[in-house]
Amino acid sequence: MDRDKAYEILNKYVKGEEYIIHSEAVEAIMRKLALRFDPENVELWGITGLLHDLDEERVDWRSDMSLHGPASVDILKNESFGNETLYNGILAHNPLNGYIAKSDMEICILSADPMSGFIMGIAKGYPDKKLRSVKVSSILKRFKEARYCRSANREYMSAIEKLGLSLEEFSTLALEALCEIDERLGL
Ligand SMILES: [Fe+2]
Image 1 (tube, rainbow, N blue to C red):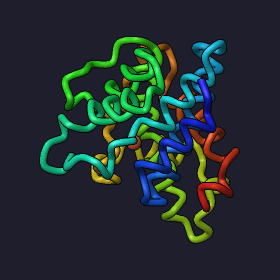
Image 2: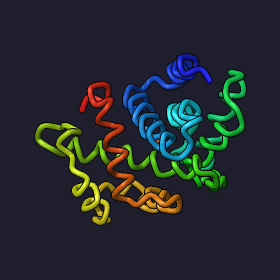
Image 3: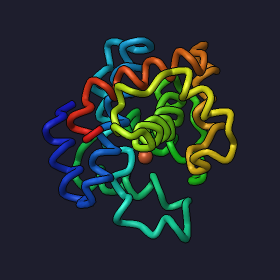
Image 4: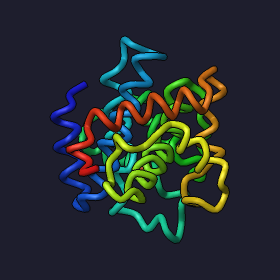
């Protein structure tokens, strides 16, 4: 699967820089998760992360969340890009469209999406706004504070535990993945 082509498609359909950055953040976490759970398919997992919000600016998901995911799959089919595994991964990141995550990759993207924003949000709250200042213990502490960053779905983030990865291990891995591209993320 061609990452350059995927990046081109992403930039064709998504114009908001914050969405592109979010897409790259989820990609980075998915690549690290793939190294652990499915090392032969790092590229596929990464590209699924990169394209998971492809329809963000194309559908009115604020009024109907069930549109988010299926519309991305339609775009990719029109572009003749991707395969069923990738499509199902995209669908799985948003259970509100009716697709429930089953495979390892599907569960990973469900968890990686909110975790990326959660960690970046913590970094943004620090005086230096640096990912490298974030500690795993801070992520775990914030996780338990229900009122902190409510939009980061705790249930989705915890889904990863079904794969035998503790929240602490997942936080560590996700933080490492984001730190590797911290300049790109501007944090
Ligand atoms: Fe997302």
